[in-house]
Image (tube, rainbow, N blue to C red; front, side):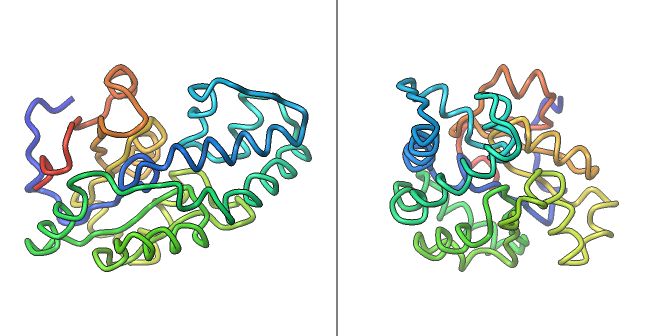
Length: 221
């Protein structure tokens, strides 16, 4: 792990959405609980449901509750049913995020979103919270979940924006709050900055060897 947080080498910043730009737990937890209840599963422990924040939905329903592929697809339908109407805006922007994004833009940095959340929801959230103005491009999962794993989303943004040269020269930094951001960045040859204000932990970030760990958005400037 790098001992000093010096971000001057990076010109392009890839941002995760849930747990990094916005505090989205309430909406996600309520949507997951609604989906589980459709299978007769009563989950009272919010912390268990919070594990869904970060990974692709299908992976979480399978790993945490043993749903098979067909059941996972049905669960995702029920999740989106609730999320589209109510859960999407049970959400808030983290303190310091708009100011940090503004300062990075003013200093000439290029900003992007790379999230496992389906793009149809991602765009609504970015617009609703006035965050879209800061980003040069935003990429997320497709509704079919074919592009939901973080490394695939990162690869998609790189290809869409023709950032292969920046990728090879180490100019891109991934910023996120879970191990999936670290692993997704590493698979694409990128460094990752893990953030402590989201849903990951110091222990998780050290275990998966995040290149940087910060506790406030302003540390990036």
